[in-house]
Length: 222
Ligand SMILES: [Fe+2]
Ligand SMILES: [Fe+2]
Image 1 (cartoon, rainbow, N blue to C red):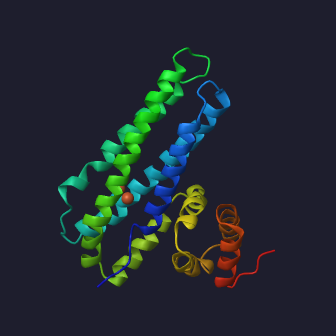
Image 2: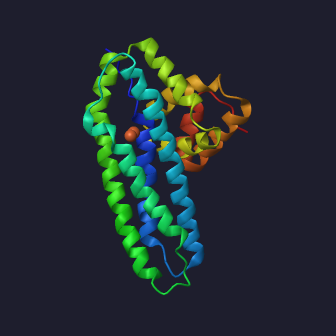
């Protein structure tokens, strides 16, 4: 039986980012343009990561099953479009939001509620994928097919998003999972990419966690 968890890293990264963004949203002073702009940037980053994640699920993970004639549960088929439309609505509303407009506080509160709805629905979506889809993937894809999917997941992730996945994903993983994730990539990644990964690890982990990881990976850090 295939035990690889196709969702573990990305879903934990998304849960981490959604939680951080929820707090940031709640703290934002909608009369302060800098805070509005900073929140807008964070939401755009979230949207880019979610779009890349959905793209990989729709174009790599699901086709690996459908090409073998395995059917996908109906409730998972249209979820991405529905969720995309909610986040798009939030981002679009932000484009017109400015601290100089009178109704900005009211609009900010409405967007906070809408973001919370999105947050809740996205958590349920990932839960569904892990409860309903993961067993199907593990049952129907063998180790070789899984390796191909894993490689395609890496190949189809835009290079500029790779470090963001590590930034939010690494601190959400157990030490053992961090080692399992990074050990195989050390020899595949360029020195430049590896130094980028280490710098986001240093930023997102505590000093103790970071030092433990460096020792576990047998790396020299200057
Ligand atoms: Fe999904
Ligand atoms: Fe997902």
